[in-house]
Length: 408
Image (cartoon, rainbow, N blue to C red; front, side, top):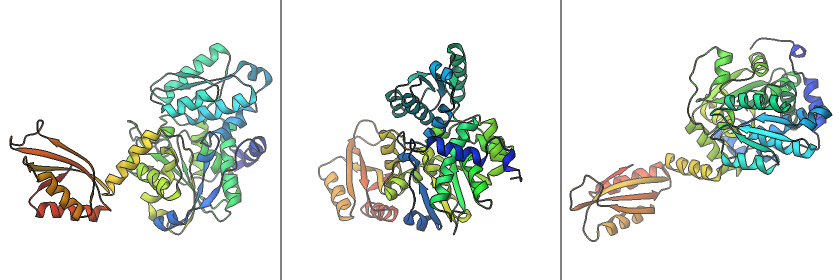
């Protein structure tokens, strides 16, 4: 990070403060609360900024409203267009309807249905086009130009960036003792605006960005790396292949570090927030906690502010993440046991598991599609145990009773 004149940047503290006045009363000043339990787990003091509790369940409505308010009357009449994987779409659609502005949103194929339906519910026309956010953006620009609509970019716009920066104003006003901010990075709008405001108000504050390991676009841009970008990430809201030009420049000058987190780390953080804080976040909203959990030494003893940037996630996906986390913790396990196909064998296994304190969730016999002898059968079970140590004890008891059991 190089030293730079903050007033020379395309977005300044005054811009962020002006945005705060513009959106004040229309956007929720969300809570910034300390989590003592998460702090104990991570070895630092943690405050959570609950942007997942905005009306559209995302911080994105801050920048969207700031940008829409700057439109001329002619631009409002012609309408706006935006490309988004979901949260920016809802922020634009919701505020455009409030202001009486026609809105069209282009969303890439694979956008979670909850985000598509919520966007439509806010009154916008939704067009599904493009395999990636970048392809959706190309279509949006072409379609908007033909119909005379104003493009509302999700991150590479000074007014959008200034609007997102109001998150930092609220966090530092609520908790002046914060010395570290941990912020998700997709295109970079949120962390850019927050960095501008935070660096001006508290120059020594440490600012850390977080990206999904599968989409390290800003990490590559800032560090000159060539890490690949590919696959489906739980944090689809920050799965951006081409970060913004304005945001990249701000991040290069004002952000101290960018950390990458894996999919299992994101899943663990999401499950932890549900379990401990009883708050639902999407994958992108969980990456900050994922980074702190994965790199505790880098945050030890510090006063850390985490932005829970959004909460738009399919309930089916939540169920999958929670179940997978139970499996990782040894609390939910699928077992395969080779048994002799005669009466009493299932009862013997059931009794042993009951005596060991394990709960049977599912059970099935597989006689046909297995490599076992004709007089044998494959018993498949899903069991619930307290933790990994309890599971190990159960497995040891099965082996001691001469059952050929394995986790699958």
